[in-house]
Amino acid sequence: MNLEVTIGGLKLKNPVMTASGTFGYGEEYAEFFDLNRLGGVVVKGLSLLPKEGNPPPRVVETAAGMLNAIGLQNIGVENFIREKLPFLKQFDTSIIVNFFGDSIREYTEVAERLNSADGVHALEMNISCPNKQAGWCIFGTDPKVTREVIRAVRNVTALPLIVKLSPNVTDIALMAKVAEDAGADALSLINTITGMAIDIKTRKPKLGNITGGLSGPAIKPIAVRMVYEVYRAIKIPVVGMGGIMSAEDAIEFLIAGATAVAVGTANFIRPAAAIGILDGIIEYMEREKLEDIGSLTGTVDAG
Image 1 (spheres, rainbow, N blue to C red):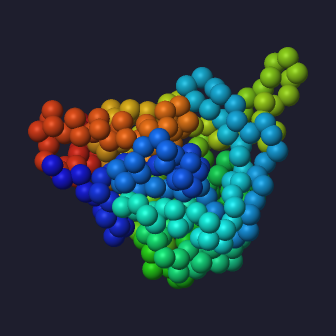
Image 2 (image 1 turned 30 degrees about the horizontal axis):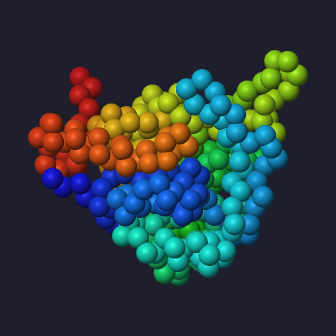
């Protein structure tokens, strides 16, 4: 049985990764299971300088999901390289670093620092976050700006570049093609969907940021649809995510067109969720007598 997949030139031992923002810097989950079993660890988003994030409350549970408005709180790229990366380097798994910037210059500066850091195997470029200020969202919603920022980053790094797309757009396939043409090696989707919750007693928003990003099982059908549309529109690999709670969910994404998957919100409920999902995929392949995980990708029979 071959579980190995390739994402933009990066070989993963299996298709199961963790989703950025739900797995800390990896060390937080190491006590719960062997990180060596993962196809890849995707760390929480890094910026040029440390960020405190949004004011509390920052997390609200919703029906079949959760809203978060963390605001990309992080320790900054230099602190990550110095304090967190040495721990991750001891594991036999791919380390993928999610990053972002408040300007094109910041995007390129962070990418340059990560490009020269020993132990980083790929970059995930975050151009979509529904709980940042409105101006920041232009990186993931304006095709012209999307093209410009991806090209700028592509020029400063030789690492495999995965671009994380925003679902808060009218035409996800169009944005995918823009990212591909600009130099992305792979795409990951979807990020959270902008949402809001109100306390009916106080009539105030439940989040300090007013709006936040909806994740969890509630968004899975939307995510599967978007992966399906993007897979048909581009030639580069897709990493699917959004509400994956079980092996069946992950397999659904693979059939829709994903080459690999990332487990996110499930990590908050079951810290070892990703390993359970991997084991379930293996059981499915044994049951269906599948010899190669790649034989599942894009096999949906849409009639």
